Each structure stands twice: as C-alpha cells, then as structure tokens.
Length: 273
Length: 334
Image (cartoon, rainbow over all chains, first blue to last red; front, side, top):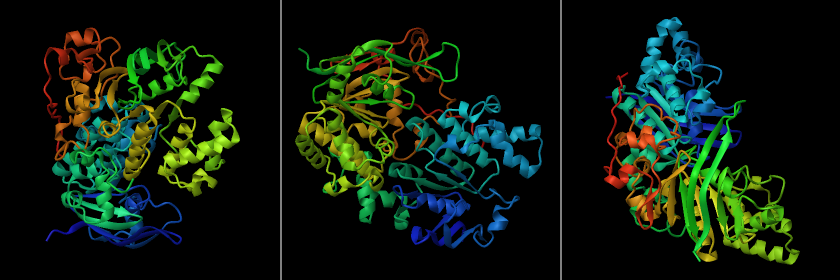
C-alpha cells in the first residue's frame, strides 16, 4: 500500500468564534495533485498556510496533519527548526514580486536556503542554482544570477520563486494561486512547468485556485471549498464534469468555457443572475 | 454620416520612464485607430503592458496624447476646454477594475450614487428619481443605500460603481477590467448586467479586458493590442473562431478553457519575451513566422475581410498554421 505523503484530519483554523477552515480532511500521495478550488473567503489559502505553519497571529489550529508520517502540529518545533525548515514542503505565492526580497539578487534568493543547509560556498552552490533555474524553463540561467527581482517580468519572477523552492528537493509543493497575477500565455508556461515537475521529479502538488478551468488542466483530485467547509471532493474530471453539489454546479456553469461549450449567450446559468 | 460614435485616429501616447533623467520615453501606444458604432460593445484585449488601459486613459483625458485624435460624439480629444470637459463627462463615464479602491469609504452608498448628479447640478427631486431608477437597473437592494461601501461585497461594490457611472445617463461607458477583481460567479452576473444595460439603454461600451474567453460574452467586436499597437480587429466571432494574427492565436491557445487536456500546446521553455520592437513588427521577435521583412518595417493593419483587419504580412500571404507548435526546452529531470 502506498502511504500518503500528507494527510490532514479534521483540520480547523479559527479566529475566535469564526472558523476559517472547518473540519477539513484530505490526503495527498507522492507525485500526485490535489486542486483546492473555491471563491474568495472559502478558506483555501488558510488551509495551505496551516500546513506550512504560516498562519497569521491570532489563528488557532485544530485537528492533525501528518507529513511523511510526522505529526506536524505536535512536532512543529522540530519541523520548522533551522535544520528541517522548508525541506519537505515548499510554497509559492500569488504575487511573485511581493514574495521576493527586492534587495537580493536571483543567485542569493535561489541559493540562500541551499547554502545554509549545505554550507557550500557561493561558487560551489552556483552549479545547483543554475540547474534548478533551468528546470523552471530558464534557458540561460547564468545571465540571471546578478539580476534583482524588480528587473524581472512576472513570469520570470514566478520561475525564480519556484526554483528557490525546488533547490531543496521538496516532496510537496503548495502553489497558492501561482498564476493569478500573470498573463494567460505566461500562465500556460508556468502551469506546464509545474506539470513537468510533477511528472519528472515526482513532486506532489497542492494547487490552490479560484479558476476551475485551471483545476481541469492540473488533473488529479479536486476539493471544492465554501465558507471553510469542503462541499465536494473527488477526481477532478468527475467533479468538473458531473458536479454533485449545487454550489459546484453553479461555479462550473459560470465559467466562460462552459458557457461557450453549451452555446449560451449569457454567462450566468439561468435563474441566478 | 457614419454610424460611428467613437472614432480614434492614429492615437500615440508615451510615458516618461520612471527614475530617468534622460529624455527617455516609453512608447505606450503607437498609432492606434479604431471606431465604435452606436450601441456597440467594442472590447480591447491584451496582456499587461499592451497599452489597453492607456487607451482608456487617453480617451478620458487622464493622460497626455502625443499624436492623433479621438472623436467621441460631438467631442474631439484632445483640445477640449474646461466647460467642454464637464459636458464630456456627462456623456462618457468609466468603471475601474478594483471596486475596493474606487469608492470613498466615508460616504454612504446612496450619496456615492447621487454624487455625480450633485456635481452636474441636477435638481433634488430629479436626483432622487434617477438614483432609484439606476439602483433598480443595476439590481442593488435599496436597503444597502444607507450603508457604507465597507459593508458591501465585491460584486455589490462593482454594481455601485456601475450605478455611479450610469446615473448621468452617459452614452459611452468605458469599463477597464471591471470584473478581474471579482469571483467567478460574481463576474458572470456583472458581465450579464452590462450586456443587459447595453440592450436596454442603448449604451455604447468600450470594454477592456485581458480575458479573451470572457469578452465574447459581451463584445460585438474585438481589438487585440500588443506592444501598444492594434494588431487585429474584427467581429467577435471572427477573432474568436478565425484569428489571423499569430499573437491572437497564441493568446487563444493559452486560454485554460480551450486546452482541455494538456498545457503542452503552449510554449513552455521560451526565453523571456523581449520588449516589442520599435521599428519592425511588435510581435516579431516572439513570432515563429518572422522574417527580414517583419523586422524591417512593421506591418500595417490591412483588411482581410470587410469586417476583419490584421497587421501581419504572413496572415495576408498565406494562412499560418492554426496551432502553435510546441517548443521543447531543456529540462533536466530533478
């Protein structure tokens, strides 16, 4: 039997009486994709942040999360301590520009954690830095090493962000709306990079999006959230093609792609305008 | 007389590059021309930096026009005096992208919607009537009028912005990415609302968006901008079903809803896209069909069919392949 890479049981994130994430359970296997779909305020980002230990102050977390059979909440100190930090799972964010320190060069941004971990010199780490940059589809990484984030386009910045996570060879990559701030053509490139990493480096993905058509591209399993609760989950194709829950059904019906396929003139499904 | 309500001719706009002492200007728009008929929705589509918002800003007089003119109804921009600008703003209104930033948080919703009427000196009794009418049209619950914007959801706020724009009964509404800050289901209802308002009130719409898949639900005609130039214009059906410009094709190919199984069709390992060329075709360096002629002089926008124009030498000579070949890049399995 294949053990799950990550398993969340009855995960709850609450701010006082308000539950941002309410009793959510799921598992992700090695090299597989779980898409977390929902509108703003559905709790999808809070779920990801709870896994990474990045919840804002004032948030209380409940339930259990195990990563590679290690209970995260009980071993938080061990897990996020200097040695283990960021080793097993990594996270990329929506705004690559905001997530990259503008005063550091690409070389430092990508290599910092790696050099801390391995104790390698700048020179020695450079080869590995170029290798991960190449994995993200950057053809001549050497030219990029001395560049600052604010000199990068959005797509390149997101690649640098992915590379800085890949360098430690994580088993799980959490991508929180990684393409929302990007143009469609750039979005397609970033998605295909993520898919290739999943297939070739057997990286498991937790892909968070508000866009159902992106979930259908990423495949795997999909979990639909609303107001902190999972309303529907299952194989992505099944959830999108035959949504069982009325909320999912409405969400699917609102996508321009679906409206076009059905030859509708209006975007809203009937009776919900 | 032509039926065109908006006629833009050779519009060029440049910005001073930030942080430079040199007289270094960034060409945001280069000789953009298009027209919009009465009660038509014209969608301008492009990626970030393509100049689509600059078109809106130039038409509204919010940015300096270097060259060219825009005739809107009986007004011609640039060259209006203060009094004419005031009249102009009764006729042309705008809705911006982020409804969280475009409403004064201290005013009540009712005041926000009434404000344009007060500015334009409409009598109190008529104001009340017009506000009630527009609130009904945009389907806002009247109870919300006493509240503040902070109490509203994103969709409700955008309805307030639309109400504020429409309360003056303008003839042209410029909507600059009006739904990109909204959730999917809210986006659908706002798009449908705009389409309905257009049908009911005879409004003319300039709809600016990055989402080609979305605009077909509202646009009669679509113009595609790239690097500050209009590279393709046609009826919505023509541009969506039979795109002629290689860039439009790649844009359509990258729409997630159109690639149902794999992203592999989209180029994945291309080097960073270089800045649009100033002399040749703006898409030249990124185009797989480019040759010497494209680099030497930019192709003009020429007619392909009576309603469809494209700026590409290749699209005229021979039809380029309909799908972009996948570009395989080096990827060493990690």
